[in-house]
Image (cartoon, rainbow, N blue to C red; front, side):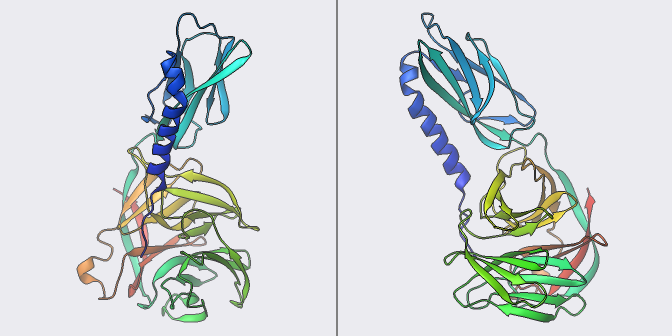
Length: 352
């Protein structure tokens, strides 16, 4: 379906290279900083940062920053502590600004902040099975007001549908122009927002009741258009990497992001999204896994193994990967399906 473009490794490499280049002159002058670039820490751990310099260097002051935020200052080479409890996960730049004689120089390093602990492991219980249209290459799945809403992909076949849960049949639909590959969708008030995958990358705004197309906007957030969901205040979207972007619910402009990590490293290929009880639930593309994400930090707090939900040898012939999470907030029901699956499952997640 798509190439999983992983920006994070490139970003870390560029950050490390940049620090090395910036620090070459200071290293030659005998000035160095610890920890070593690329060192991993768990969120909550304190990072001991220390600037070392020759004995004849007499700083007026040393100011320490994480990314662009000041967290400590010193007048000597003793170590300072960086608290990581409230810092976003992922690559973080640490800079010491050494002031002396009216001049300053920056000495930088970087760390990678991981989730504090391993995610809790879950399995599932099937509560009910419903029919699903095998022609639907599922990208976005929603439930509201007694109906499923589904956005589908594939060039020449992408559409938005309102679906009767019991029959799996569309009661209303809007087809996209053949040049578009449909992606994730979200309901915001009386509108449905839908993304497209690659060029032309667009954001569509539909009237929820009539399915009339209200607006088509250019969309340039992230690498590609993938998943989308709404928490009542802002939209969340992903782009094939481990990054989840925040969008303004009215302007659809970027207003922040988190990077998704577990206790071992980045969790890439975040796909279809759903917001359930304060957490983000996300399919991992091409895997029978859903991860539960803290939307404030990006930490993966849970992992749901869905290997046996619909085993490959039992699926209909044209079926593709697991994708599609819908939540009925009124009853707590959770619905799962996959691309071109003939079944939609109502499930309950259970801790192992």
